[in-house]
Structure formats: structure tokens, C-alpha cells
Length: 418
Ligand SMILES: [Zn+2]
Image (cartoon, rainbow, N blue to C red; front, side, top):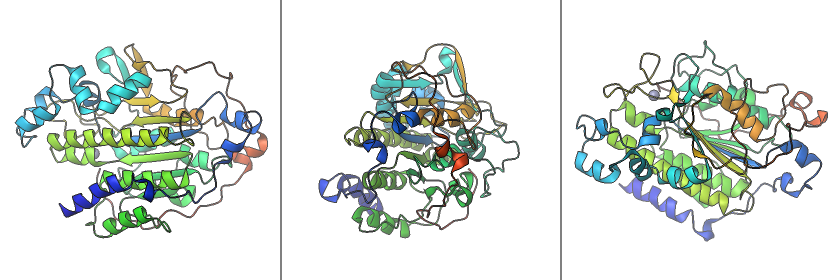
């Protein structure tokens, strides 16, 4: 409980102006460039200048679009207090239940963005990889590959180039890409050794200088028992603090506790974590939209690495053996995303399209390391500049070798199944 109190105090304290730090890094040059020339060429058709990617590990489309599952929420095998859990998350219709569980998704994203994957309308998002577990899923999201030889969740460096690395190798975004994840296998999935990405993963320290909030987070982390998955709240607070101080252009926030709760067969905690994550994303979006650096120029992309079994007795697991594990979802919101809300038309999107979608949103042209596959054909919010503009040859990734960055931390821990 003491730990919880400390963490909760971070939540409040970090928002106080007295703890706000002046960013240590210079402001992104993009903001200073004229609206013609380099900036326009790099931005292409997109008004997106910054990108926040969030993944919610193993969180099903069923809960996103219908809220608490009637067959699970009242099942004492999976819910310790069925009365209280129903009081918290139950309502008479799926539309009311989903809004109760995830108000940011259904009050804000549904109004201003797009939500893909409600199979009740035959709107589908599917995983293409065979295993339908975490490493192959994140590999598919970030590299566009459905690599059959990807190891099952082991800390082995990924041979595929990922889109975050691709962006970071571009001089325009170099050093402006930051990754914060709860699961400690991400340094391998994103191949930190090769990519040079700034990755803070598991219980790695932040090691920020002159930053009281970061020091508090590190202090808490030092005293945490070893685990392959950090508390999502710590991951979130770490990311938010970094965003406040350094203003990265691209942030990836990988959250993992929903999957842990599901594997533990705790549907009550699975719902609670989903609700917490909705609140975290809401708060992050509020931070973004009240910061001139990010306001109205940032796109938010939220998805998951895999689905779960759809049968009552199978929701705890996922994989090629569990029907439903290939069924996922995507939410997007930002200046280029037409506010269509929940898509209720027949359609099919694949997870492997997200890597090139991310590249497209950031206005990056094709080139060496460009992720394969076609971007998600989302409807754009306004008339654009036409086909994606080409970057000057001198700025293509092929023409500029990536200089390795100093990782946020370099401690690797043992990993487990996911
Ligand atoms: Zn899992």
C-alpha cells in the first residue's frame, strides 16, 4: 500500500507546475522551419508532426467495442467480487458498458478519431503472423513482417528493421524517437543493439539529470522485485516525464499488465487495468493538447499485439491454438484522421499494415529500411498535398548512416513468457 501511495503521489505531484522541467534538448527544428521547403517536403501530405503510439498487450476487441463481457463479469471463477465488479463496469447495453469501461475511447476518440475492428459490423483487423503471441505481434506492428522464424517471446535480437528505427535513422527525426515499455523483451524486438533507439524497458532506470520526478521513479524501481513486466503506471509516468522534458517527435508507450491479468485468469483485474490505461491515455492526450509543441499536430495510434480466445474458458490464453487470437483492433486520432468514429462498414485491415501507416503519418518517403506493406487506407481529415512528397536525396536513410544513440538505460533482465 505504501508503494501504491508513493505511485499515486507521483500522479498528482508530476502534474504540479513546480515540478515541470525545462526541456534539456533544443526544440525540434521542425517548429522553426518555414511552412514551405524542407518541412513540407518531409511532412508530405500529412499535418501530423508528432506521433504517439500506445499498445495495450493482449486486450481484446470484445471489451473495446462491447465493454465487460456478460459471460465473464459474473463468473466467480474469474472475478473475485462479482457484485462490485458489475457495479463498476456493467450496464444494460454494449454501448453503455464500453463507455463505462473506457470513457476516453468512447467520449473522445469515437468523436474525433477512428476505431477499427468491431467484428459485429464485419469491420475486421487481423494479425497475420502464425503464432499470435507478443514478440511476433510487435514484430508485425513495427516491421510489417510476419516472420515465421521469429522466436516465441525470447530475448533474441530481431533481424527485421522496424519503423521506429527507420524514422530514427532519418536526420529529421534522429534522436527524437523514444520508447517506453513495461515488458522487458522490447530491447530485443526493436533490436536496440543495431537500431540505437532510446528504449526504457522493464525496470530499467531513467537516469535523468536534475529531474526530481525521474529520480523518484528510479527510486521506486530500485525497490521493486524483479519482474519481466514493469507496472504500467511506472512506464506511463516515465514516458510522460520524458515527453515533458525532451519533447520527442515519436513516442512509443508499450503497456503490458492487461495480458498478465488475463493469463492469471483475473477478469476483474483485466477490466481494472483497461480502465486505468484509458485514464492514462486520456491524461497523456490532455498533456499533449495543452502543450503548444504537440497541440493539434500530434497523432495518437493505439492497438494491441494479439487477441485472445473468444470462448469463456479460453479468454485467458492466446496463440494459434486459441480461436480469436488473430482478432485485434486499431484506434487512431489526430489532425489527419477524419473523425468517423467507430467504423461500421465491412472492411479488413491487417496488423502488418501499421508499420507503413506509421511511416506515412510521419511523412517519411520510401527508402532503405522502409517497412513493407500498404498503409491502412484511412480517410484523411482534409485535403492534402497529394502523393507523399519526396525527401531530398541527401536526407534519405540510404544516404545517412545512423549514429548509435546512448540508450536511456542498458540493463537487460531475464525474460519470461508472454
Ligand atoms: Zn500473453
